[in-house]
Image (tube, rainbow, N blue to C red; front, side, top):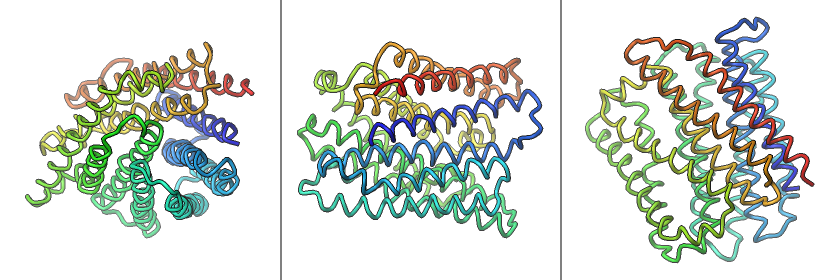
Length: 401
């Protein structure tokens, strides 16, 4: 059952890459039967729910099954299907209708499913005889996922009532994004990693300190996306402290990983090590950019240019989260190996790196009001590379019994 859900999740990632390719195609060429804005909503919602949330749920259930037995998947099967159905409902109806009654119904179903998953999974964690630091990360992830729904509901409320306040619209969008990216996604990934390598770190006190720093910093870090509101001094100081706290915690984490690098080398396979290293580099870049954004002038400049925002979001979703999850999948499923799979991973990873470089170039050029010749053609080519890598990966894993 675990292998089945892994294959479904990887298929969903391939669909996300396909939608990204179509979006890039429509910037250059006519495709009149598809609305660009509707397709963009479908792409983002399906990436969050159909790919990241789906695979996180699958991997979290797999982690639980190691302590409670394989039958745990039967208990969560209906929740995994509910999330899958709601994800495809959003994919279809956002593509066809944008924000309509049906797309909002499936979005709401997705949120309710995440709440039910959080409730049941929390109870199962509490029933385990041994509590670890991994459980703290996973519980925090569940809370942040539930909290992010406030942004989605406020956004739906504003659209339903045709409210046009730009500030409230942006605050709602950034609230949802922040507690998904920096809450649910990040804390769940860290929880899975801690569960995988918990025996490597004997100093649990330090691991708890790192967790508490990230936990404390998560809520105030939301206001990094709202520095254009001219925040009061006390809140701005809290935001800067949160950004510094995350950097400090990450440095401490990297120190521990470096000390235990030989042990980790034997624990993780070559593909996993490669992907997790790239994910760690991307996360380091993310935290550095986040710290730089505490300078108000830089923050206003960055958030004023769409390519920079898009590049930053893709850095997190592709560079940090997706590469980590792919690496973790290969560590959980050693059978998903071989030359063709390594080739597929190499193609996809090349696409991720090229995509970030091109978006960075486009963003920096936009800040100087310079149009880079051929940049959209290159981004389309990169989107094709990403899709090709995922297409080959899906073909390979389906040939493995």
